[in-house]
Amino acid sequence: MNPKILHTVNYGLFVVSTRLNEKKNGYIANTVMQLTANPVKFGVSCNKDNFTAGLILQNKKFSVSVLAKSCGRPIISKFGYKSGSKVEKFVDVQYFETENGTPVVTEKCVAWMEFELDEHYDVGSHYLFIGKLLNGDILSDEEPLTYSYYLDEYKGVAPKNAPTYISKELRKKYKL
Ligand SMILES: Cc1cc2nc3c(=O)[nH]c(=O)nc-3n(C[C@H](O)[C@H](O)[C@H](O)COP(=O)(O)O)c2cc1C
Image (cartoon, rainbow, N blue to C red; front, side, top):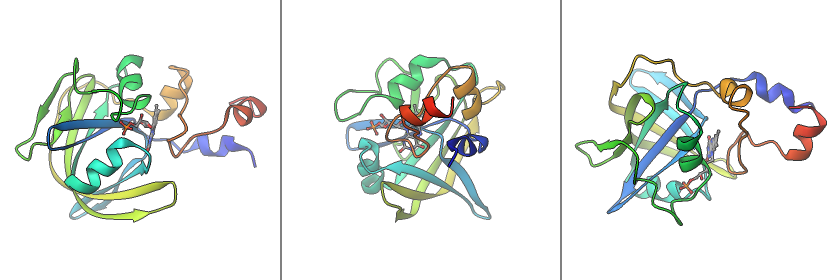
């Protein structure tokens, strides 16, 4: 099957963050979507191997920061290509903590939201986290980054832990 069909589905790009005690951590996700309007609930797909996954399961609160179109590569490599089990991501980045103590990345972001974990589903390699919206705000009037802009203009790819990962061989075969 031509994997190009998967690239016709578009997304935004986000930093999903949480904390457990003193450890703050976050990862880059494209799979963030609104599921219901009343109350507002979102779904977030998180690889079980992501360090953040275990923290969200225990803390039961997380934030979603919406990356700006002009965010640049460094913030994506910091949160999307490194694991919080090995590095401290919440240094040299602008963020604040909500009244619940949830860290929220504000640097290069246009909006943020905080969620309470409502339910989670085991969908194989990933957990589907369902979060109920608690709070949020606009940070800038810049355009948000889209996944297709990241693929086309940043020449970015999705690493192995991303649900939208496509192997190098298939990308080469189908000229993706
Ligand atoms: C463009 C892009 C999109 C990604 N989308 C997701 C995603 O939706 N879900 C996911 O679990 N990982 C996704 N990832 C991978 C995680 O961000 C990556 O595995 C990260 O290093 C995990 O960090 P952690 O181990 O500190 O939690 C994505 C990465 C990139 C660069």
